[in-house]
Length: 247
Ligand code: PGA
Image 1 (cartoon, rainbow, N blue to C red):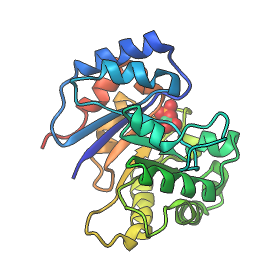
Image 2 (spheres, rainbow, N blue to C red):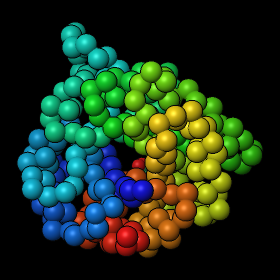
Image 3 (tube, rainbow, N blue to C red):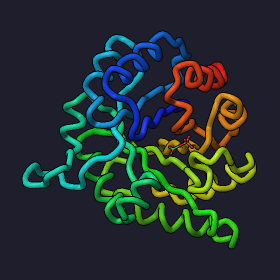
């Protein structure tokens, strides 16, 4: 089973900064079972992809259009365009988009279907709010969000789920390992429709840094991490990669 270390650069880095970070990341050595990917803003995809030539780090984007046919959709970028730009992955339904762009579960599902149709691997984000957790509704909240955001059965099941509690993103707070384990098991139980025999990978995101990554990655139910702020510094991201168990 692979371990994923995914760096979400969000709306950061101009092209030269992106190029420099990608070049530094290429110096990092990591075992074969580890898959590292970075997710620059659209404007830096090309320069980052160029800087990653010849190294094993994959490229991803932070969103795509739900429209698979090209046409009059001003401001949108299609999954096929991302594939053409060298992307292997696309983050979908990040809580910042659900909040600031009012992205619904249904829209996330359609985006995931468009991404799969263009041979991209969607990283579908789900996570409860602080209020859901305080009121003890976190498991139901994530389960509902997940069921509605999943691509339909007719599509390939090659996607990744990222559990990102909204209250843990950028806050420095993280759930306990037991809370992460409980949620990842709940998510895994929803994914049982997978008939191909391959288990869907479930990664954790929210205030992951070099000081807590190794213990989170050591959890049985955790197949990797989605890292925001700490992915913007090569040394810090490198230390997170180094936290993955050997073998
Ligand atoms: P953070 O963000 O690591 O800065 O908390 C994670 C994310 O939003 O993907």
